[in-house]
Image (cartoon, rainbow, N blue to C red; front, side):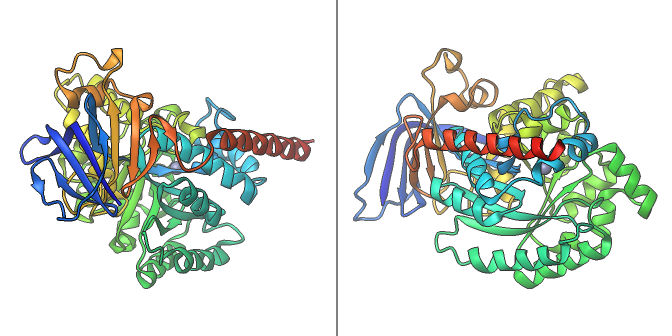
Length: 438
Ligand SMILES: [Zn+2]
């Protein structure tokens, strides 16, 4: 299938300014970008569907580098609690009642929200992964999925086997829209022996690892007490970061040596600014990590700990909290934030050929209408995208060249059905939780 997105303001890489904007056409064939303005060649038999993008910014699709999509059924369920009480008293007891059907529709709800917000790929850690993969594929979103592994749980052994089965089941997806990683939950829920087994399995299966790391001060103290190391030192010393891609969510409580280690080991970091603030976990040293060469992307975390699955919001929050708390308006400029939200996050989740508008890359493209009041006038399009745009401005979304959102509407699955089925699943879950607490 050939597509030509015409006359838009194209957000493209720039050698010294990270990103820049050039006006022109973007040509796509069979899911791959073939020409960007004057770069690249269109095949001689190119006969595209032409899409007018005048008055729009055409940018690489956003990537959500850390999510628990199925948790969207728990949005607003337990707010204003610190992480460990939030997990132990509210989230884990409710999650115990989640069925595959709940997770299918919860994921569909999350994917609907993400696609309409311009996100083309997400990395997820949860359970009932077959249902998550199916919902993602049916709606048309690329997903990098992992089964959450709690090393101390009774089913920990079977979960390693289940993870290996998932890799076999989804690993030969011809369109490469579903990728499977291993998801050890965190160093405080998985023993060193279990983490080493996960790493061996990752090497054996050739798949990456997705973990929560250095999220709270309590975690840092616990790991220090048990192993005499920081969480980053602990996992690096176990050798598990040699499995690639290695994606670490949060990395809030990291010191200078930890940051150097993350950079040296090629760890991708999913920075979850809003989740970290909402759960009172702290503020990650985002500027230091980026300046040290750590590959950083933005993640929403689950809807239950962040409210919205909105990378525009994460990008803005991530930048502004750093500028404000350091009294430094010059750090983390707009182009850097947009780069982390697209290319940085794509690399962090293990997609080397995604996240920028370059010939030969996957055609993950978000078209943003610039016609609304809050995007007028257009002195600087990169600034508008970083500081003023939001999910409601997204007009079209292409995932691997396929138009999944056009004129702000999902084209693959009926939106009304997703919302009503997710609401019915939430009601069912609520009843099950109530029956159990009586
Ligand atoms: Zn998380």
